[in-house]
Length: 122
Image 1 (cartoon, rainbow, N blue to C red):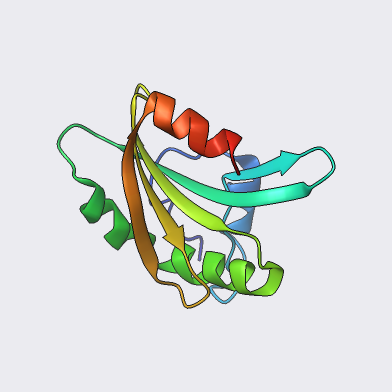
Image 2: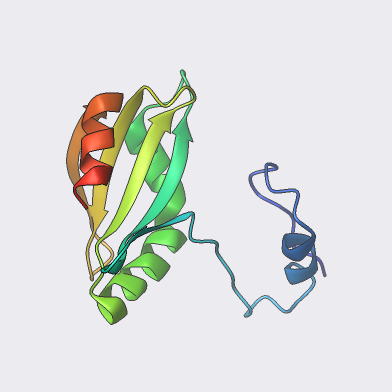
């Protein structure tokens, strides 16, 4: 049986294909890999958009499976891993670190300028 798309925002041929596989074949996408010359991958970042009627903490509740997978990625690679929730216009950001145990640790809410600096200093 084909599993249904949950977010209704991922029109992907690969996603549609993968949903035809058995339920024990899971997949997630890692939204972003931050990479630097001479250093390689410096961070994995999962992102989510905060709509005006939602608050960041309610978004955390929808990401449990992603946290499990990303915490394993963090544990195996030792590369910092984050969840960044942002407004639709990318003017405000809420940044969480994901540790090896799958726990999310709120770092801080940031303006665009603060988040720019956060990314640049990774």
